[in-house]
Amino acid sequence: MAARIGVGTAGHLRSGLFYGTFGIRCARVQHSAPLSTWSQLKLSSTSAHDGRAKPPFSSPFILPARRMQMRHKSIFQHRWFHPESAPGQPPKQSYRVFWTMTFVLGAFSAAYIKWIDPYLTHRAEMAALAEKQAASASTEPVFDKDNFLPFEIKKIESYNHNTKLITFSTPKGQATNLPVASALFARPADEEGGPKDDKGNPVVRWYTPVSDASQPGEFTVMIKKYDTGKLTPYIHSLSVGDKLAFKGPIKKFAYKQNEFEHVGLIGGGSGITPLYQILRHALKDPNNTTKFTLLYGNLTEDDILLRKEFDSLKQQHPDTFNVVYFVDKKKTKDSTVQIGFITKDAVMKYLPSAAEKGNKIKVFVCGPPPQMKAISGAKAGMKQGELSGALKDAGFTEEQVYKF
View (cartoon, rainbow, N blue to C red):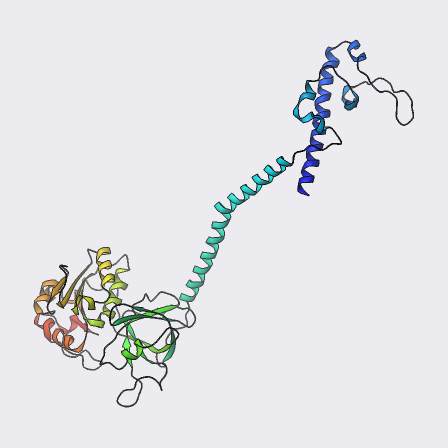
């Protein structure tokens, strides 16, 4: 249909051009040629309707062009006036319609690829981002401080030979927005089928999420399996789709940005998670001025948790973060890895003087009970307990130390 319309329109345009051009040429002949020239024109002056003779034509602009003969035929040699283009015989120009449609479709495709498609993609991305931000900004809390709520496992990743990263989905896609530093109580969602303590109650332990608290829709905990433990073997046996119950948050220490000039972090084993929570939160702030030093003890280099994350943070913040790893067995020549325990000498070597810094320094400690006893002294239940060990020997006071 479109081709027929195009051909018809072109035919009308050419007919118009024919009459207009021919009229102009006739006007030129009329003004320049004598009357005898016009007498050579064979004109049909008899009407087809009434047979009466018509007067001579007074204007060349109304001459019936198809009935005229002219010696000067250059106008008829133009490609538009070939015999096949005569009125009543539409020109064969389907190839022109084809190329016109090809050009139009090509131009539309180019416009779609350059402008329309990126625009639609951008709109979709912005809509998805807005949805995530709306979920993150939800005021409804993810956890309950008084009751355990079940959370479904979304993803499980093996971190090393005895540690897994387990990601849980939040019920309405919200972010946890957990304060720093805080943790969560965990227990089996299936109270009957899960492990029990000596009194027959479900085993409860606390864990610190290692994921960004502003991440919508999920949170991740790092679980190290202890063969003699009661809960960690059970958690390691769970699969994607299973559930674990959480309650909280348990607020540990209300960290304030740039409150201290220097912060010492001393950890061991899976006790590194609350220290990592503080460190990442602080270094994420572009206005952070606090300097951090991490002393992290493990049995072997393979047992060092979050090592890639710590090394990356050190590379990104060389002026505000330093890390030293302590192991019993070393297999590389890495200068950041030392053989031995975290002792008084190590504390005095890598941390600023407690006496000089006063209340401008804070040391956070978290690790297995033997390490806690050797470095800071054990906690007294939920209380901090008396300070002892390497930190006291190095001159630190109870006000300068916090035990997780």
